[in-house]
Image (cartoon, rainbow, N blue to C red; front, side):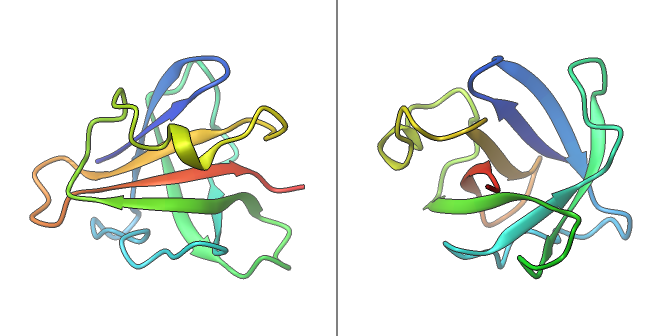
Length: 109
C-alpha cells in the first residue's frame, strides 16, 4: 500500500496499485500522477499511477523525490513545497517495500 498525506488538509490516505505492484516507484520530478476518482478525506485506499501530463487524469505533478524515507509525517518534502502550491501532498512507497521513498507532489495547474 502506498500512503499519501494531503498537507493542507492533513489527511492520510492509502494508495494501492491495481496490479499489486508499485506504479509510482519510477516517478521523477516533472512526472504527473493520476489518482482514483474516489480520493477523498473519507477514503483510505485509492489507485495511483504515473501518466502523461497531457492526460486528463493527471491530478498531481511530482516536485521532489526523497529516497530512503517512507514516513509521510516526516519533514523531508517541506523544502520542495512553496506557499503558492495548490494542494501539496506526500506519497510514500508501499509498506514493506525494499526501496523506500517519498514523492512530493502538488496539484496539477
